[in-house]
Image: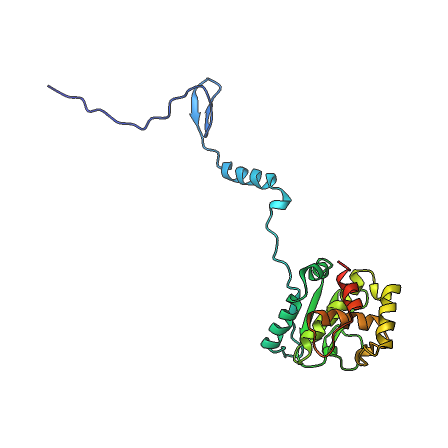
Amino acid sequence: MQTTAQRSRRTRPEYRGFVSDGYYLDSAGRLRFQPEPRGDIDLARARLDALLLDDLPTPPPRPAVVAVEVAGRWPRAKNVAAIRTAVDEIPSRFRSRWLAAGGRLEIVPGDNARIHPRSARLGPVLGWSTLGSVFCVVAGDHADSPLTASHEIGHALDYVFGYPSHSAEWLKIWQNAKAAGKVPAHGDQRQRPAEYFAESFARLWHPTLFITSQAAQDFIMGLV
């Protein structure tokens, strides 16, 4: 008995009344298949268009305390670490206000912060901050650099809080402290109430050499 060889052929999925995945009906009603080469591209574009801006990845925040190179020199790494620790010791309710305003502290090598390219003045200083700004600079290689960093952030926060160092209440605290002989002579603290404010702020977290008066402490802590 002769047998007939059967051919096997690839079959299409049975049409069940819907069209998808490249299948379509032609003008004669026949089921056709033609993959759409732009399908993946269109899908990707549609997904991108549907994305909300809030879902897009954002770059990491810029570090607030950074070492900078000046004339090929960098501040010592251990000193940079000590300054960062000093800034971290400032309570977050103060530090966060400085950061939210765009606060930045740059650490230069050596013991003179005036070598920073943005310095507009001459004369050696351990730190400085821009008037009406939250940008600060500190010399990185001095024993007092951590305290100086907190002092300059104190100046920046004075600006952020609307210059409380000029208020009648602070002026009274400053004058009473001077009369009691409790305002140090260095750093123009006896001549400028803003300097006493910044130094009192720094000494709250680094209570060495002298401790601010209780009235000064209460005033600063009451700002936030």
